[in-house]
Image 1 (cartoon, rainbow, N blue to C red):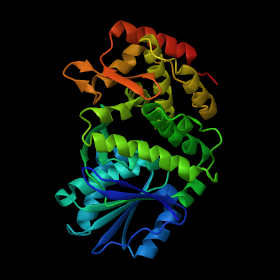
Image 2: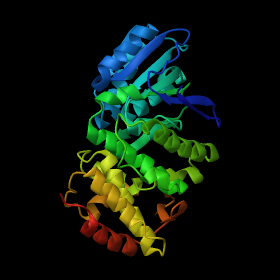
Image 3: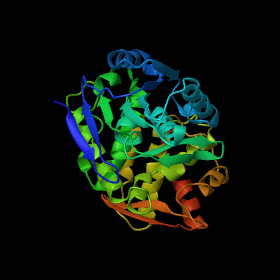
Length: 343
């Protein structure tokens, strides 16, 4: 039996995790948007559900551009698909972000179902109603809050997921452990794609996100905690033109956040994050000066007025959100560079 979770607010829908899941067949017209990296899995689903219209795209941040968004919109319009269409979105986090925004905006809203096929999409991107695409000026600057009809995470799709993206997706689950004070979610090292404990671990991480989203559906307060590690992480992604992946960038961002917490008198979480980085073995950071990152952080969605608010972990399950002085940020960044792994 699959693990069944449910998000209730503001729009209820089920979230199922397991192996060999049965994805429901919707009524009315159906279309499939899928990541070509999981083409076999996606087309097998299309055959079972009798989905006649299919568009495959390469995953990665290149899928979240205005050009790709326009291409996908034109594909739907070219098929003359009506408002009662259901869009099935199969792939990683970039595809579920794009697919959700596509569903939110085509004909001012059609139904969609997420079938995440990466650990990142399962624990983070496919759950929580946030959809969107990037601009050259920064990540996720265009989007909408729009809920799927359901999320169906078939763990059999992870069989073809390379080890690096498998691990990088668990960085978000690790982050959920810091947010919730759940030390069990920091134990990533024993996990593998075939691990019997994987389903329960992922469900535990998803449950944290559900609780936060239900408390703050539109990211006006509590939900901003989910951005832990993302302010610097998104800047690193953008400054490197996404040569540094999201998972690796967030792992580095968590180290920076832990250092900020220590600088503000909190419990020192840097050893735990350094253990995560050692397990992850991310690419070496390029020699980026603080000034190269500042423009991207200035456009961060956590900016209120003229102040960028940082998510600062003061201990397990104890987060603060507030502005930080430029002096402290620069000092912490210098320390961060000295501690970052250099394989």
